[in-house]
Image (tube, rainbow, N blue to C red; front, top):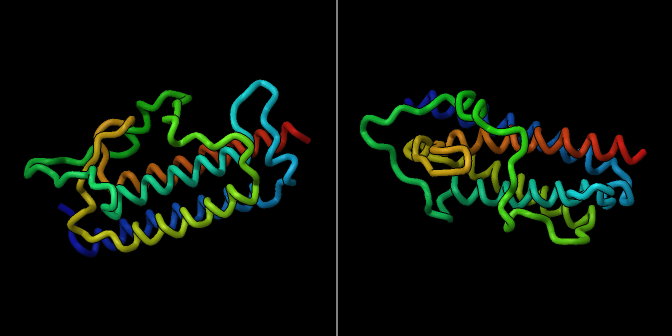
Amino acid sequence: MTSVPDHARRVAATAEAFEASMARFLWRVERASDADAERVPPDGGWSVAGIAWHVAVTNEQFAALVDGSVPLANPPEPDFRETPFFEITALVPGKLEAPDKLHPPEGVTKGEALARARASQARLSKALRDMPESRGLWSVRSILGQVTLYQVAEWATVHVARHNAQAKRLIYNSQ
Protein backbone atom coordinates (compact mmCIF):
# COMPACT_ATOMS: atom_id res chain seq x y z
CA MET A 1 0.00 0.00 0.00
CA THR A 2 1.01 3.61 -0.35
CA SER A 3 1.83 5.78 2.63
CA VAL A 4 -0.10 8.98 3.26
CA PRO A 5 2.79 11.25 2.12
CA ASP A 6 3.22 9.11 -1.04
CA HIS A 7 -0.52 9.27 -1.63
CA ALA A 8 -0.58 13.05 -1.20
CA ARG A 9 2.32 13.49 -3.63
CA ARG A 10 0.84 11.09 -6.17
CA VAL A 11 -2.60 12.70 -6.04
CA ALA A 12 -1.15 16.21 -6.29
CA ALA A 13 1.16 15.32 -9.19
CA THR A 14 -1.58 13.48 -11.06
CA ALA A 15 -4.15 16.24 -10.52
CA GLU A 16 -1.64 18.89 -11.64
CA ALA A 17 -0.78 16.89 -14.78
CA PHE A 18 -4.47 16.45 -15.61
CA GLU A 19 -5.21 20.14 -15.04
CA ALA A 20 -2.25 21.19 -17.21
CA SER A 21 -3.33 18.83 -19.99
CA MET A 22 -6.89 20.18 -19.83
CA ALA A 23 -5.62 23.78 -19.86
CA ARG A 24 -3.71 23.11 -23.09
CA PHE A 25 -6.70 21.33 -24.64
CA LEU A 26 -9.20 24.02 -23.66
CA TRP A 27 -6.84 26.74 -24.92
CA ARG A 28 -6.70 25.03 -28.32
CA VAL A 29 -10.48 24.58 -28.60
CA GLU A 30 -11.22 28.11 -27.36
CA ARG A 31 -8.97 29.65 -30.00
CA ALA A 32 -10.51 27.76 -32.90
CA SER A 33 -13.22 29.65 -34.72
CA ASP A 34 -16.74 28.29 -34.25
CA ALA A 35 -16.74 27.20 -37.90
CA ASP A 36 -13.42 25.35 -37.58
CA ALA A 37 -14.42 23.78 -34.26
CA GLU A 38 -17.80 22.59 -35.53
CA ARG A 39 -16.67 21.34 -38.96
CA VAL A 40 -16.94 17.57 -39.29
CA PRO A 41 -13.99 16.18 -41.27
CA PRO A 42 -14.95 15.25 -44.85
CA ASP A 43 -13.71 11.68 -44.31
CA GLY A 44 -15.84 11.29 -41.17
CA GLY A 45 -15.06 11.35 -37.50
CA TRP A 46 -15.69 14.02 -34.91
CA SER A 47 -15.40 17.76 -35.15
CA VAL A 48 -13.15 19.58 -32.68
CA ALA A 49 -16.32 20.40 -30.70
CA GLY A 50 -17.22 16.70 -30.81
CA ILE A 51 -13.78 15.80 -29.49
CA ALA A 52 -14.21 18.30 -26.64
CA TRP A 53 -17.62 16.78 -25.84
CA HIS A 54 -16.11 13.28 -25.82
CA VAL A 55 -13.29 14.43 -23.52
CA ALA A 56 -15.89 15.96 -21.20
CA VAL A 57 -18.12 12.89 -20.90
CA THR A 58 -15.06 10.67 -20.47
CA ASN A 59 -13.79 12.95 -17.68
CA GLU A 60 -17.23 12.67 -16.06
CA GLN A 61 -17.00 8.87 -16.18
CA PHE A 62 -13.50 8.93 -14.70
CA ALA A 63 -14.65 11.30 -11.93
CA ALA A 64 -17.55 8.98 -11.09
CA LEU A 65 -15.15 6.05 -10.73
CA VAL A 66 -12.73 8.04 -8.58
CA ASP A 67 -15.35 9.60 -6.27
CA GLY A 68 -17.35 6.37 -6.03
CA SER A 69 -20.62 7.75 -7.38
CA VAL A 70 -20.39 4.89 -9.90
CA PRO A 71 -19.36 2.07 -7.56
CA LEU A 72 -17.44 -0.17 -9.96
CA ALA A 73 -14.04 -0.07 -8.24
CA ASN A 74 -13.07 -2.79 -5.79
CA PRO A 75 -10.56 -2.80 -2.94
CA PRO A 76 -7.26 -4.52 -3.67
CA GLU A 77 -6.56 -8.10 -2.66
CA PRO A 78 -3.90 -8.44 0.08
CA ASP A 79 -1.25 -9.58 -2.45
CA PHE A 80 -2.15 -6.95 -5.07
CA ARG A 81 0.70 -5.33 -7.02
CA GLU A 82 -0.05 -2.35 -9.21
CA THR A 83 1.09 -2.77 -12.82
CA PRO A 84 3.06 0.31 -13.87
CA PHE A 85 0.87 2.50 -16.07
CA PHE A 86 3.47 2.69 -18.85
CA GLU A 87 3.19 -1.11 -19.20
CA ILE A 88 -0.58 -0.82 -19.53
CA THR A 89 -0.43 1.97 -22.11
CA ALA A 90 2.20 0.09 -24.14
CA LEU A 91 -0.54 -2.44 -24.96
CA VAL A 92 -2.99 0.18 -26.25
CA PRO A 93 -3.59 0.03 -30.00
CA GLY A 94 -3.11 3.19 -32.06
CA LYS A 95 -6.86 3.73 -32.22
CA LEU A 96 -9.48 2.80 -29.66
CA GLU A 97 -13.19 2.90 -30.44
CA ALA A 98 -15.05 4.78 -27.73
CA PRO A 99 -18.29 3.25 -26.46
CA ASP A 100 -21.39 4.85 -27.98
CA LYS A 101 -22.29 6.55 -24.68
CA LEU A 102 -19.05 8.56 -24.99
CA HIS A 103 -19.77 9.76 -28.54
CA PRO A 104 -20.77 13.40 -29.03
CA PRO A 105 -24.27 14.26 -30.19
CA GLU A 106 -24.62 15.29 -33.81
CA GLY A 107 -24.30 19.04 -34.26
CA VAL A 108 -22.72 19.76 -30.87
CA THR A 109 -21.52 23.36 -30.77
CA LYS A 110 -18.19 24.66 -29.61
CA GLY A 111 -19.89 26.55 -26.77
CA GLU A 112 -21.79 23.49 -25.54
CA ALA A 113 -18.69 21.33 -25.68
CA LEU A 114 -16.49 23.87 -23.91
CA ALA A 115 -19.01 24.38 -21.11
CA ARG A 116 -19.24 20.65 -20.50
CA ALA A 117 -15.45 20.21 -20.76
CA ARG A 118 -14.82 22.95 -18.18
CA ALA A 119 -17.37 21.45 -15.78
CA SER A 120 -15.89 17.98 -16.25
CA GLN A 121 -12.41 19.29 -15.51
CA ALA A 122 -13.61 20.84 -12.26
CA ARG A 123 -15.41 17.64 -11.25
CA LEU A 124 -12.50 15.31 -11.99
CA SER A 125 -9.95 17.67 -10.41
CA LYS A 126 -12.03 17.73 -7.22
CA ALA A 127 -12.48 13.95 -7.24
CA LEU A 128 -8.73 13.44 -7.65
CA ARG A 129 -7.72 15.93 -4.98
CA ASP A 130 -10.34 14.58 -2.55
CA MET A 131 -9.54 10.89 -3.13
CA PRO A 132 -8.77 9.27 0.21
CA GLU A 133 -5.58 7.23 0.50
CA SER A 134 -7.71 4.14 1.15
CA ARG A 135 -9.21 4.33 -2.39
CA GLY A 136 -6.12 4.96 -4.50
CA LEU A 137 -5.33 1.30 -5.13
CA TRP A 138 -8.93 0.25 -5.63
CA SER A 139 -9.21 -1.06 -9.14
CA VAL A 140 -11.66 -1.37 -11.98
CA ARG A 141 -11.73 -3.55 -15.10
CA SER A 142 -11.47 -1.34 -18.18
CA ILE A 143 -10.70 -1.51 -21.88
CA LEU A 144 -7.05 -1.19 -20.79
CA GLY A 145 -7.38 -4.10 -18.37
CA GLN A 146 -7.27 -3.83 -14.58
CA VAL A 147 -6.38 -0.27 -13.53
CA THR A 148 -6.24 1.40 -10.13
CA LEU A 149 -8.02 4.65 -9.39
CA TYR A 150 -4.61 6.34 -9.36
CA GLN A 151 -4.20 5.04 -12.91
CA VAL A 152 -7.66 6.22 -13.93
CA ALA A 153 -6.34 9.70 -13.16
CA GLU A 154 -3.18 9.07 -15.21
CA TRP A 155 -5.35 7.73 -18.03
CA ALA A 156 -7.43 10.91 -17.96
CA THR A 157 -4.29 12.97 -18.55
CA VAL A 158 -3.10 10.78 -21.43
CA HIS A 159 -6.62 10.74 -22.89
CA VAL A 160 -6.82 14.54 -22.94
CA ALA A 161 -3.34 14.86 -24.48
CA ARG A 162 -4.20 12.34 -27.19
CA HIS A 163 -7.35 14.26 -28.12
CA ASN A 164 -5.52 17.60 -27.95
CA ALA A 165 -3.20 16.29 -30.67
CA GLN A 166 -6.22 15.13 -32.68
CA ALA A 167 -7.89 18.55 -32.34
CA LYS A 168 -4.64 20.26 -33.37
CA ARG A 169 -4.50 18.18 -36.57
CA LEU A 170 -8.13 18.98 -37.41
CA ILE A 171 -7.71 22.70 -36.83
CA TYR A 172 -4.47 22.81 -38.81
CA ASN A 173 -5.99 20.85 -41.71
CA SER A 174 -9.05 23.14 -41.85
CA GLN A 175 -6.98 26.27 -42.48
